[in-house]
Image (cartoon, rainbow, N blue to C red; front, side, top):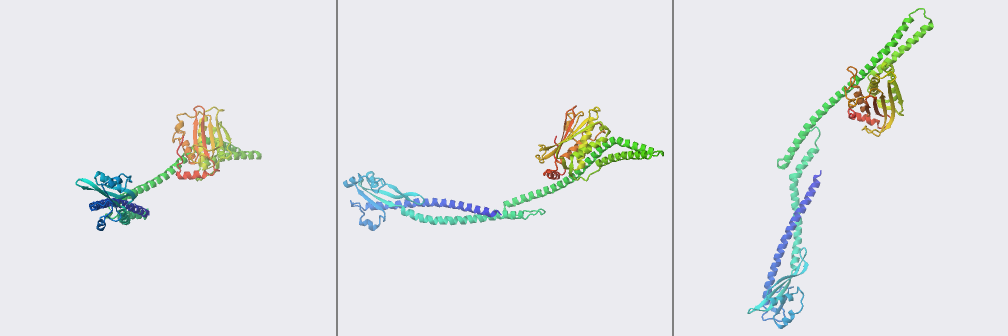
Length: 529
């Protein structure tokens, strides 16, 4: 708890505040009384000087205090008295050089001017700093309107300062103790009025548990804290309501996310079946030819006059055609079969080569030259083989459709692979190792106004019924989900160019891509074009 430190600091500040205020008041009062005491002392000395001067009649030319004065204690012990008459001897003495603050000088000045004076002289340690050491008082003696003599007394003020310093020591002790008492009392009151309610509020907040209904309660005498408590309770109620709404929103988002995942899988599945359907329609004729050949050989085998060697030859030929049909059907089944969605390390080169062999059965691709340059030293990526096959199959189908309108000897599709290190368009491990697959055709190319929309869902330039418009969109989604990048480019009349970049499975950061996909709940990264 931090209240203990705050209380100590406030107590110290209270004490300093009270101490300084009382100390300054004490100094002010002491100086007022000191000045009054010095004034009374001067008045007493003036009266004593007047009595002493009047009692000098008849005058004692020696300037000494008479026995009468000593008996009456007119002049206090420690005071210095000087008396001068207006005689020839006095005139000679006044012409001598006297110190500026000497009693004799001021007495002779009074004798000359006829004016009594009061002058503070000297320096000594007073109460807190240097003050006047003594006071000189002069008095003129007149007879028949003429100044005939003058007397003066020099009285020390040090005893007054000593008395006040003793008093000030006691006053200082009183100020220290009194300021401590006031600070303690003020801190106690502040603690009772403010710190205790704060401590109760803090303790209540510390013991709060998530499922508990937190209520800040204070007493009525806690004044402003009742308002603070009410505000805190209202704030907590709003937080609780917002938390409940947030929880409901999260639950609904989870449900929507699961539905979106399911819809995403359904879209991929539907597009996959559509792609396989396009392949099947082209391969149906390819399957019909070997079936017709097999039926012909079966008719020949019904003849009874066949030699054993001819019969064996017809059986071998029929077996080869049936095996061909079986291979075609198996490849179609492999493409249409739903995988378990398990990601594993697969070879891009083997996958591309397998797809090229499939197009060998496609009548529309019979006259197309597939040129492959597999130059990547490492071609293994971590992905779902079924989904990755769908990516390249969609691109190749579009390429086949694009070049099928060319001349018989002018249809070419080029597949090139290569390794790259780092790619600025990839937010996940942009400095990692990747494989780049480029698929280029010499078809009519892509119109510049269609290029920005090439990966948009349901966007297609084909005739109605020839495509769903989801092939490239699904491919984009799959590649981005794998932590890769896919782009399309091309100039109208000069062919199309697709580039697919995928992270290699052998790099240590490949697992981070999979964890990123989990964090994004399967949505992958934002589409980039």
